[in-house]
Amino acid sequence: MADPESRPGSSATAELLGLIAQLRVHCPWMGGLTHASLVEYLLEEAYEVAETIEEGHPDAELQGELGDVLLQVVLHARLAEERGAFTFDDVARGLAAKMIRRNPHVFRPDGSLQDSFPATVAEIEQKWDAVKRAEKPERQDPFDGIPQALPALARAQKSLARAARAGLGLPAGTPVPEGEEELGNLLLAVVRSARDNGMDAERALHAAVRRYQSDQSDQSDQAPS
Image (cartoon, rainbow, N blue to C red):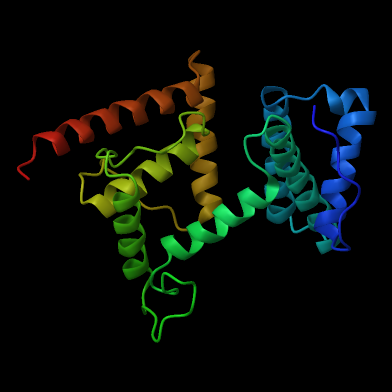
């Protein structure tokens, strides 16, 4: 394990990095952490942030929950630094470069602002998609990069958004609910029906999304270029 540096500089981020480095050496529990053992905490903290926002909790609570998510990022970066892979600064620099690269509608390649900006979200999405294709030309499937581990509803919604932008066919819909409350009641009723009939709604939706992605990917491959 690399020797932790003394707390560098005076910034809050530098102080946090120094504290974590010390904890990795002097706290047996913290010292025993691995990337794999941290995964459950990363997911849990992300859900807690979402709950805080959705339930309208005070800003002080949101601040604390965001700190818990940041701790997960700092820990993963520290583990990587100890084995000589990358540092927290590398993560931050990479993210800054990605934001410049992925947003050519706002930034020039050197990071300076463009003279004018697109007027619509649709234009921005088109630019995003073009940049992503240029970055990873091996990704031909429009659904590449959607995590398999996403909850089924989130995965379904993201898949349909990708399909719509790619001009692929969309599954048949149902009458549009008048609001999110009605939609929530409808979804809850579907889950209740699944439970009453001994079925798992999450598993069923995951399977439906897989079938949809596979069908659309096959059609995309067969379409003339």
